[in-house]
View 1: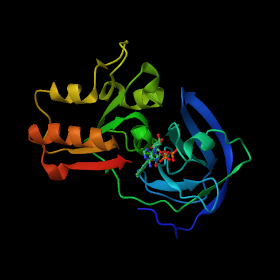
View 2 (view 1 turned 90 degrees about the vertical axis):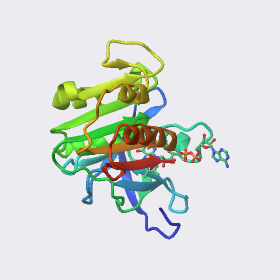
View 3 (view 1 turned 90 degrees about the horizontal axis):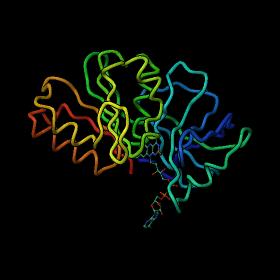
Length: 220
Ligand SMILES: Cc1cc2nc3c(=O)[nH]c(=O)nc-3n(C[C@H](O)[C@H](O)[C@H](O)COP(=O)(O)OP(=O)(O)OC[C@H]3O[C@@H](n4cnc5c(N)ncnc54)[C@H](O)[C@@H]3O)c2cc1C
């Protein structure tokens, strides 16, 4: 958890672009090392109560990317969306322990929960992974080209509120329920809302995946 005493350092925004309705990608120069899957806390002022964001870019990239959606009436994100190149933000050191190893595993995300998996993909960890990404609309599959180029048929888009020419029309949870068998010896990495994580965890456990093979990052 982030504490009010956490040290925040100033960074200069290099870009902040809308990549889908209400969804933005914020960038600034990388001046630190991190482990793919980690998050940083961000505030617009040193006195802000910062919010946590997964890093959505690779460990060797020149820039750090942050993927975020605007929460209506939120304290940070509506203001964060107005940032322009040259503006300042304040960030913490990277932290967190949501880390994927090399080898076979499942990545399961909804919405902006795709962010840590983008960091993992861009850090060379996409091989042998299966990615299930849930989104409400066909515009919710952020970084779909990048994931598709590396992961091919192992990249499954599940769209819950629109039909389209994608791998699965329906919710991530329905996709998982429909799988006859899920490998019990592989790890499952979940990232998204607490509702999604709880529901997916129940489905996996019911399909004989050991509880210890399920690793979750909950966005609250
Ligand atoms: C480890 C971690 C990583 C995360 N990574 C990401 C990421 O990569 N991308 C991302 O988009 N998000 C991420 N999040 C979520 C993110 O930290 C923020 O929660 C989110 O962006 C909140 O934005 P905000 O400050 O604008 O909204 P907040 O001010 O937190 O408000 C959120 C919503 O709650 C409502 N609300 C606020 N206060 C109250 C109240 N007292 N009563 C009722 N309703 C209220 C607001 O109206 C708003 O709709 C992550 C969270 C965690 C824990």
